Image (cartoon, rainbow, N blue to C red; front, side):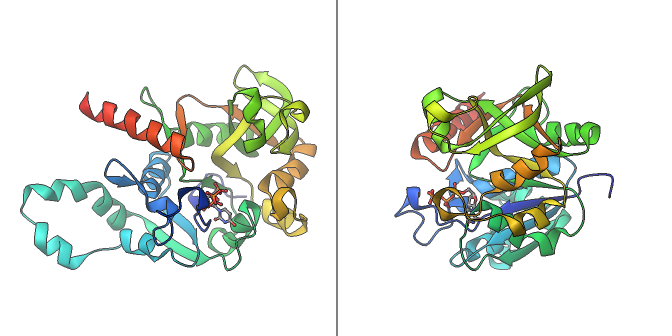
Length: 277
Ligand code: UTP
């Protein structure tokens, strides 16, 4: 197995129905927090973890994503030499220095299925997964994915980022249970997708950051549709967890669920305040 995490997969094929009508023609992952699309925040986080190969799973109506991570000659001609040029510094740097490839999920059969669709771009090596609608920031230090890559280099198995959620919210997440090895690291023994609060094995919820070992692809192929009729990544991870090969990591930093209006507004306020400091 390859030694480091070199690639990051971005499942971005979902319909984003909670953001209709905004997401009718615009991909949810392209909605901006201040002036930057969610997906660009995700790509920047991957780069901060030493990753420069991005694999994006798109779907119908998502072409704006490919246009964003490309050159725009007309626009560049227009702003070259003006004060606006600096607004393009980060995206220009990404376009210049990253390899970005795409594949399409034809039927939206869930997150597990979207990850399996990315197999062709990932191959046989460990990889990161970022759900761009979960926006993470660690103002005091390393990004969440950079912290996770360090954990991967120690434990050499799949890593899921978790945080404590209010007990009444467990039905929105995959929830883990297991044994803590250190105050922030749990060897996962059980995981349940969107449990009712009364059935939840804990209040530790998986958020949109994963590092997965490539055997996950074959496991997903055998997973039957679960909650909501979707192929759930949680069900595939449970198979690895039964063999002691999943670690849950309580990361340092903040996470905003930008797939919900409340989380999106909270993220906007947070980044606006941060930009004024
Ligand atoms: P979500 O469930 O949050 O996204 O999936 P959604 O289905 O687009 O949102 P709503 O509930 O309708 O508002 C988490 C991530 O997984 C991707 C989504 O694009 C999102 O980034 N996803 C989900 C896929 O790529 N394919 C799928 O079949 C499902």
